[in-house]
Image (cartoon, rainbow, N blue to C red; front, side, top):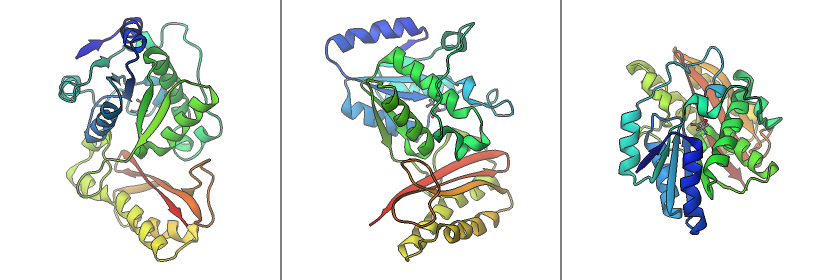
Length: 282
Ligand code: PAF
């Protein structure tokens, strides 16, 4: 496994494989790798000859009050995990390589970026879209892999790749969960023992919604209010949003019909967690 810090060096190295017709599968990450990332890497390995993982805690996607400084950076452990998974290249750029002095070009996927998580985190998706564009330009992957847990991020990246004719296929992989249902997230490590228990309320609320829909519920207002009741029964939980939306455009749905996405963001203590479920009613 090779670890490369310099963008030009990795571009050059990967070009050789491209010229030989070897496909490149790319998993962009901010590190603190968990089983969710590993499932993306494994999917990439099934479909590609060369696997590239980037580890870069991207400052432009953090708000001024967010956890950029304290974001976990267990780099040694991350590199070991990549090695075990048979990753060929880990791209580990520094902030100055990605955002050199004078950097002033940003990518903004309009509309989609201001909804749901974008409301509470202004500028977040602009930072994501910008860094992912840069990473795509540097790595030039055939396919890039993202997790369904960040459903809005995955949609924005798909939209961006389509709108800007980026020559990359985007694949979205099912959310990896703990045995008890908690969606894996690099931020779960911040949860105290009690908060970890309370955090289960996100997946439980989604399960409740699934049961209600299976039982014939269609009114999204009612479904959301039942989810709210369940979540606020936990003292440490503070709802940021619960939304039932059209997964094509993230616009709110009044009634469940056809494809729907139920997404929620809830702070457990100080830790903001997200989860979602995408379904279809025939
Ligand atoms: O999902 C993430 O870890 C990040 O948002 C990403 C896609 C690596 C961009 O920094």
